[in-house]
Image (cartoon, rainbow, N blue to C red; front, top):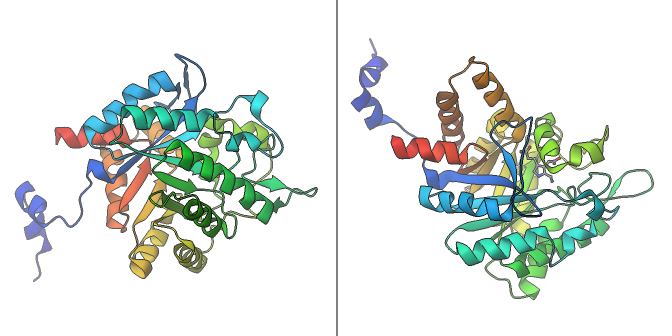
Length: 326
Ligand code: PBG
């Protein structure tokens, strides 16, 4: 009789034969940044997550460095007075994100900084691009604006540009613009397989796009949750267009897609444990229904098992602290 339980009997054997492990180096920490000084605002639907002004973000960045978290991913909370139909504030070289990038790179040159390319925090309608009169997001007009946004981030010194908009051809356009402007080291992490997911709800609260978006959705550009062959086609296109790394998003409900992408392409593959995934684990933990640290670590290890090289997660700091204790 086979006895697989022999290798589960005690902790040393389990440690010895474990196939996958999580390290602080696997984590990317998404943060919400606001204008002003000494600004700290909780996000009700994301317990433990706050929108911070730059001065309060600096100690967080320092802790990431100390814990070995390699990258901070920035998401802006833009004042309503700066939002427009075309989201042109996204291309302002003195806007919030370029200012934060410059300061972070100055103070912590060893910390990787990643920025989102999409217009939703900057538009009055909360869409990632420019709508026509019927509300359809125009592809080429949007790509032109996103390319300006990406260049403005590159000029500020960002390490990784992460287009999350799902327009066609945007990776090629951004890569070409980066090359033409001699930003040969700027990495692109493409949100290649980004689904039209209801799990983004709390994020939209955090950046304020829930209010601007209203009842509208993003199904005419983000992927249909029923598809996974399509994810492979999207990834193939983004690699051909110049992506250095690709991403699947959301995370836990889409681990099958992560596995297919990793097996098919063998490219650095990331997954985003999004706001709604974080919120549901937090809510259950706060109610005493789940063990917070145990489900946090188990959920992150699952990404590694699925083939992800790293995970964007709001648990990054907590998980890295936990790994340090272990
Ligand atoms: C916007 C963007 C979204 C997220 C990251 N970038 C939301 C959306 O597409 O509406 C979601 C992240 C999360 O839910 O944690 N381009």
